[in-house]
Image 1 (cartoon, one colour):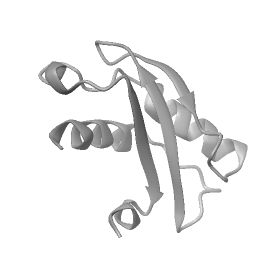
Image 2 (cartoon, rainbow, N blue to C red; image 1 turned 90 degrees about the horizontal axis):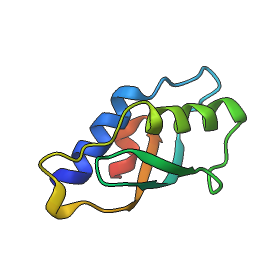
Image 3 (cartoon, helix red, strand yellow; image 1 turned 60 degrees about the vertical axis):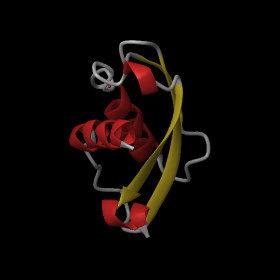
Image 4 (cartoon, rainbow, N blue to C red; image 1 turned 120 degrees about the horizontal axis):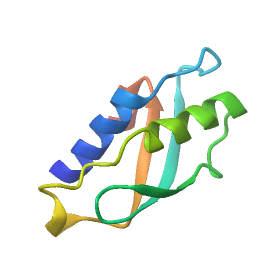
Length: 92
């Protein structure tokens, strides 16, 4: 649980939402990472959005390594990251 929260918080902090992003947006992004948190693949193919939004999602995931230190025992190579705008609709 805390591992997913740490990943989500890191990506939320890095997500620069473009003006074309519409309220009610939901998308699950598939991410593959290696030990250390470096992202090696981002798949936005299931997201229905314009190219600006898709690039913003990719940039948010790749801006910095995902949390790893302290989470080695629960590290997951392939994770699904929910993106929602506003964020609160991800929990509904």
